[in-house]
Amino acid sequence: MQKVKWLGVPFHYGQSNKGVAAASLFFRGIGLIQELEKVVRVEDLGDMSFTLMSEKDTSIRFEQTVAFGCETISSTIQKLDLTNDLLLVVGGDHGLSLGSIHGLLSKNPETIVVWVDAHGDMNPPSASPTGNFHGMPLAFLLNQAGQHKSFSWVKNHLRPEKLILLGPRSLDPEEQRLIRELNITYHSTDEIHEHGMANLLKAALKKIDPKGTSPLHLSFDVDACDPETMPSTGTLVSRGLDAQDMLSLGQELAQTGRLRSIDLVEFNPFIGSADDLKISLQGVQDFLLKTFNHLPR
Image (cartoon, rainbow, N blue to C red; front, side, top):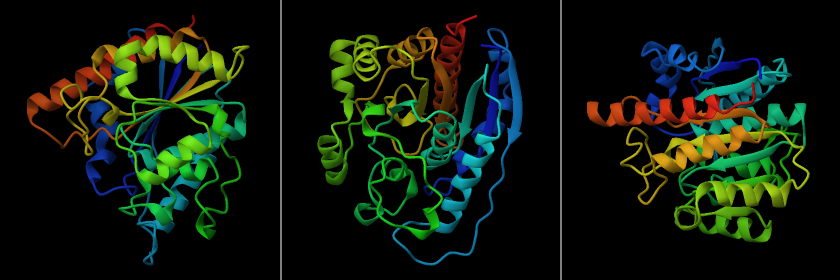
């Protein structure tokens, strides 16, 4: 691994909290890149930009904006040379992962996605209780979203057997059905606390990829963590991952030697008290340092 490429993706149209768009700039401002450079070289690719487009009322809020934004993210990532580097996508809300994962699948369709989240994020638009796109990206990636002209560019689909869900504890009925019918590998937070993050992750990867040859992508929504561990996010759900779970997650993936990319999403520096923000920042920094410190040299 030569270096980490930091790509800021201040995309917030998948939900209603605009503060998530400030995360990448905020992390830079507090010197997170300099902290990471203590263990790995970091190349800052800057921040992408997104513009609100003309919209009509549909089952997806900001549909045109979201669709074009994710297509732009995908095409941007497709153009990056990641041969020897790890891509760190700093969001932004989790809706952006349609674009990031679509772009990565174009490079290698065998990519395994480890999706860590308090929610399932695979509601088809017709079943979404909110219309917020950050609850839908996996439905599009799994080709379960139905036909939507704005998303006709989505050609690279994720095979269900290449997906691992870790930490969901707030699942809608349609998400539960898809997990069951598509036979998606899924471990709740309760299972993680009972059996251990490292043990479950090792077993899941061995089942999905027994030869250990597929690249790994981590799509990490910080709301997967318990509110006491990560209070600065917009959709808090109790009984989440603790700090040790986060560290085990990063270390285990890095030690495989196959971790190629990470989405870090839904961090909102404008949510919570000063103490909440301090706790959340420490959690993010510790997670990234632990992960990058265990990358192959």
